[in-house]
Image (cartoon, rainbow, N blue to C red):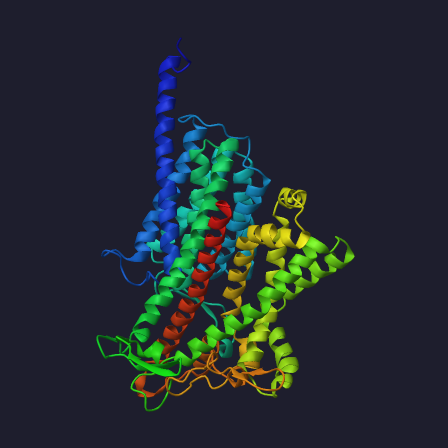
Length: 552
């Protein structure tokens, strides 16, 4: 049977199917290009890629501009091809009011900035041009079918942005003076503008390409939403890795300054074991992690701050975890659900959301006067313990509530007491959740600066390699409380506070440090390693308890 165009129905179906397959392949290619642009712009924002330096001999702005024009043209072709019937799609009658408002607002902003800043039309020109362009984009989105309304405005904006980069309208040296008085000069530079515009256009064009790949309609909308969700998730992971890589790259030179390995190269350490002094020499030497700060040191380091941070976190965990888990057991297993438990829930959530400086003021006003009136390790550990306590209560309660009631009923049916059921059934099943809460809490308190500054911080640059001796400081006395430890009542340093002191001082530590920036980043890297070490211990403990629970 022939059609009105002189082509039989079978041949037309074959052509449409072939065009649909080719277009989907092209749409997948466009999604890939959008993903590459997104990755490049994200790395450029973190200065991993510099827009003023070429990539493989090609200027970055020219590369981004060419890819954006290619992407914009491809996206626009999707809608036109679908509207002309070259591909098989299932679009709605309109892209929708939400898409119209979004594209109208985007083009309104673009037109206003272009009219006022690029062409210098001033306020009147901006007032005339921006509503016309924005209104045109709005109607160009909602009046045509979904295939045209979803692709052409996005493709045109992407191609226009690429042309701006390619023609060097916005180049590596571009600066936008925001017009503030000279005393408050504020400007937007190309290092921020170019990656940000590329990031936005890649998301917009990628969304339109994913809709085209799905054939528009319900499936296309789902594909577009999935793409945005996946890119968002990947960007979060990417930012994390970029942050870690940036810290490692900046901190390694300072961390390994003066590093040596070999027999007899490290410092000598002595411990007393059963009344006998045991002395040994470390087979490696990392001055930054094995020394303090002193004018006569060949190399300066942060060893006292490392031990101060470790003891600080250990003290907070020892204080908060038993109290938090005990409170969670009472609230979950013994207290009746009512007004009291609701008040406790609100209080714990509120305490966890309380700014850390408030906890620091509490420790400064309440704890320090009760521990001799001086800053001390004990005051700092208790202050951070109070910060950690709400999260331990919250996560422990949620973990215990998640334990199925069938476990409790089966234990009770065997004649086991309530406390034995809690100890032998509920707590082992809830331990992975409890450990997760402790891991999250340690990640927060280990990097706190304000509470440490107010309650514990001593001299940030402790001479030599003297560290706080908590274990060796315990002394037995004949009077209550029968045990004392002067080391707990001494002020000491910690990595967050030392990093803060380095940044605020803005100076180096003499000729033994290559630069203030190097010492700061090395301190940040060591702090990150300490926190990740606590994470590793917590994750290993959680994995152990989960495995143990599975084989019971």
